[in-house]
Image: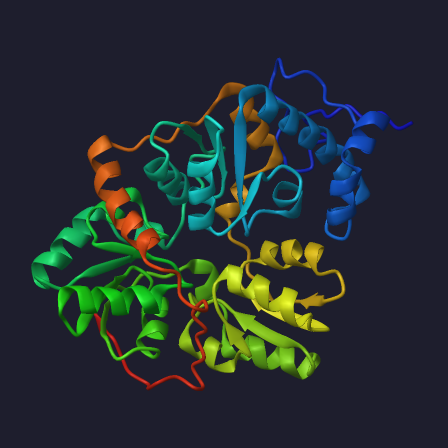
Length: 377
């Protein structure tokens, strides 16, 4: 039996076990308890890494039971987190909705800060923790509530649709939220509800431009971007097709239009996951954050997942170690002003109350209704 104490020098992710935590050891018991998880992640985690991760996974799962806690693991979390400790996994809105339905009184957001705020908006009575306060988002930080107030002054009477990848302060200033899966539906609903042919869709410029090509509603957009999806180029896809001509290319609608035009399919993270599960392609390229491919592959082992991918430095601030610390010390709690919660919840709830689209939006830019530009604020 191999027994390994985790020390500061041995932590694979650079974090040390905090004083007083005690030594977490890789024992035969831990190995047996975590064997099903290892079976899922073994193609993405080395055996040496697993000897440091498995004890943390086992202890985190024990602490969850002890403290009536649940962990929300976003699709962009690393496999050890996603498959090892996530009670609910998926995109940001789905996680917040699951948190609201859960009996858990402590929610640990394995994701970025705006996601934790959305969980707080939908579960104000619960303690929401984020393992690292610096886990931000380039898209969410591109716009503020003050910006939205100025936009509304400039465009009075035009409904404001805000992507869920925004802070609670921004959601509180807007009329209804949307996801990448229902953005077209929400935009068209808002235009009809407000009796207008224009809708403001913020803050992702590329999502807005891609939505504009699926609807007759005129779109007013904001120049915000996800730094991960913005970096992809059409040349990336051309290179992949040259090297792997049989691979199917799936892209996220936060990418520029040229990426979606070159892809075989474009849709939300959930839509991409469903596509792979249903079609079972022999080879696939996911044009999105790196860990998404690793997590989907664990459920679709027959499919070969090929790069490229771009890593989100903010998502990667979340580790098993700081999830463990968050549970032990119940840190760092995310708070939102009560007034902001009430107004932000209205925007989120309006979206939730809409009937789901018959099928999630497929951003087929080759067969798009038309090629139109947006008015950029």
